[in-house]
Length: 282
Image (cartoon, rainbow, N blue to C red):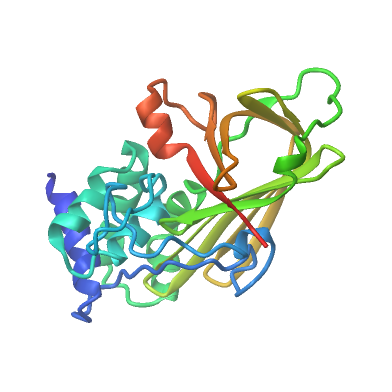
């Protein structure tokens, strides 16, 4: 492990012991305005007792079957390690290289600047903070080619489905008329600066036997960073997902196909970084 990465892990780990280090993280489900509640992104509770390898928790129960895939998710993962150094190391090492780079850079900058509040982080580490938060935004899907087909949603999949782990949440809402909403949000707290990045897509969902395409005719990106919110409307896109439905347990397992939002060719990598084992919401 590099010196910078070791510094990062120790930095976050020691923060939990109130030693004066400036980086802490928390698992939260705030909405896109950074407060409690909010839109669909705020309706999901994170998996309890998350483990960085997607294996088993200390009590023997199953941990979430995904790995931290964003910079903010690394901070959230480390915060759940309860001062366990190997656990914290695993949080960093199991994340994609770009997320590792962003998290290490932010932690190193905050440590070097002796930051212990969001004002310091914004003034001294703005570029690395921006990179970490923006790294939580989903990459755009493919541009929609031609007209948008009418939506087709199986009756058993109508409703709202959601999954949350490592400070990130994924929510789908499918309607009987074929329309739907897809929301992905990532939230984390770094040196007292709570940040949320979220994308909300609205459009049509077209299901086939083992995959579905979400045609997002309305795409809204929003970022809440240290008390300041910004938003941007993006061009329409389409994203393809593989899915399986467990009728007995009423569970919907979704894995994004390889593309701009999931740049992994290996099935194992897509299962770790691009999978959402969704639960039906009330």
